[in-house]
Length: 308
Image (cartoon, rainbow, N blue to C red; front, side, top):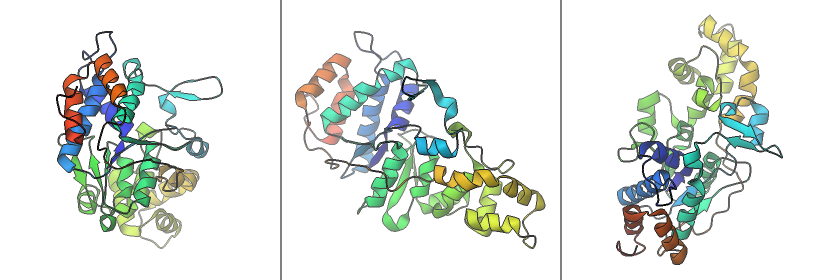
């Protein structure tokens, strides 16, 4: 099981009351919510391996070089040295180091890659996997990884939350978007994604993008059909595709999830014991994690539920 960690802790932050805090005033809603999510996912799906995938760079330079608008609306400021700082609520930002510390002390593997997003870490680990993979995310971009032949599916949390997450395999994706999983990246490139600063092909929405993929196949075939006067593609759609040539030259590389990122992951197996018991207990006491700590320990089977 591969976790899109930021996707989950953002959902926890906005879904769990912000009145949840430690005695010193430190907000804990994202921390406790994420631990509860992990407990529920483990209880429901019983994975043999568990990796929390991390954004070592939420806005990779190689994607920005291709499309400068990529996630540009999320940049809060540029720090000394050129680092672009993401606009994250202050009450969430203070919790992120604690989230990482909790996962690490519990023994849950954390994996990232220089100048890559968690999506790319997930893509790379999925590509390497020799067993079925469940990808837990609220990000549609990861639908492109779905592959029934390899047992790769997406547990999608954005629509109904973790408790009622939708499980997408090839059949479910086809029912949702009318496209095969191996064409999802082409479809997403045409459609664009305003939340990621990807404009898509102007005037081509979800339905038109799906119909083009169904009729012609991948982007190369769609662009060739648009340039061919003899094809039955509507003239207006042809013009939109041709006018978007500059975007279509570079966007596929931005939309595609990397499968060759330099990811190193140690001990991805489910933990059999708390990796750093004293550090974990210190965090539980400091942050007053209470029932969330008990539940995640019980789900992971790393200690009695009253150990904290």
